Image (cartoon, helix red, strand yellow):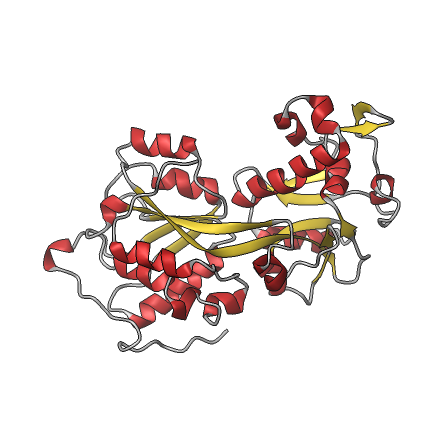
Length: 338
């Protein structure tokens, strides 16, 4: 991917006041492996176009990023947490207990969760019910809850390939897993009647432990490596990762819809989610370049439909202008969670 350097006439470059200097003069960012490539693109462009050091961006998962953000205030703590799922009340409580009083929520766009297998393998056309019946601990058989007996995808749905069920899904620390749980497992649980029989939606999230479902704690490259070693398996990925590996992966439909930036933008594809980053407001005006980085990230040139993030696979937020205005106001704490 190429990136054309932005000129000063395109983006205003602000100077850092002399009193703002600290022992640490670079922005520290941690979190979602889904957001990681986008944040890396922005960080490298920021370092090229501004008189600030290139921000340090690390992965580790959405939950780990939010936890690190809430560890406290000061130069030994991070400034931004990237997240592929929305911050939780428990995160906000942790922040408050450690003196992190105000956090700004910045939505950067949308991404889809896709289901893909080896490029040379069979084609799959899934529904959430298929996934629930494939990997849940208990499923409905003849109107009764039983331990999951399904061995092959064809056992789940005769229209699916007759190959053993082996699913590589994101581990529980990943934001992708939170969305997968809600939009796939809970939806499938309800569609099959298991939710009513179980009586507790949390029971829908209990998975079989016989090796048919494998949690992947690393990033999508680890999932891809597992598929390389197990060509009959199916993995869960972010859309942008799939679109950058179409030479290796065959994507499945979900509810008859092919995942794409277009089907996500229209809301037609059912398994999509907004992507965020969270800013520690106590660090604004203290960590050099932090406000400038945030402004830069959500600018039309970067996060707009013709920017480098869209080129990589991000679905631009139709409400980007409102996000830009919120960010430009500086220090806007997020509203209480609904």
